[in-house]
Image (cartoon, rainbow, N blue to C red; front, side, top):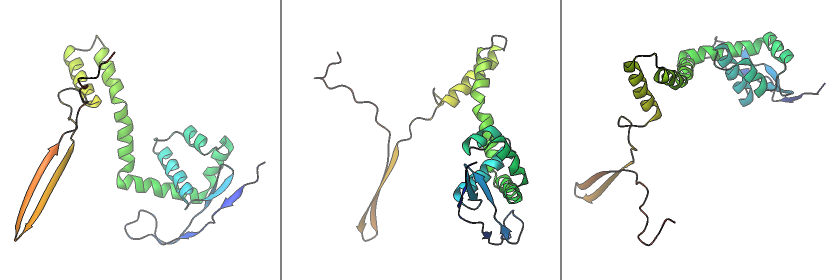
Length: 191
């Protein structure tokens, strides 16, 4: 059995304010053993673990990914269920993520990432009506960022203001599009 080291110490966090989702009053911050090291939940690594666990409860991060990332055995994972400070911190983080919209935003991004595959299936399925296949092609073009509907490179906008004094100024605004590749010099030959 590996001896574990202790990083930081358990501390008491300040009282939650009126806008916090957490219950008011001092909350004792616990510890968790990760990679053979005891880590306080209020450290950077501890907070990252709490966030990953909250994402797991939302169905965004699979259990096996957390176990691999933090090198947790099945037995270590089961023991986390008895860590009350950790469970409280995960509940509070999950509530914070729901209230801020982070949970919904991440879930929507996961679903959106599947859209090109679904659209590709519609596009290549000969049993789907041609109208739906054309719409799928248009959407794929948008997602890919190609075609006439795509936004061209925005370039940069330069604003020059020259103060001539006596309340007289000259003001110039110019959009500069990104340059394409330079044509080869007359003397250069591609052989």
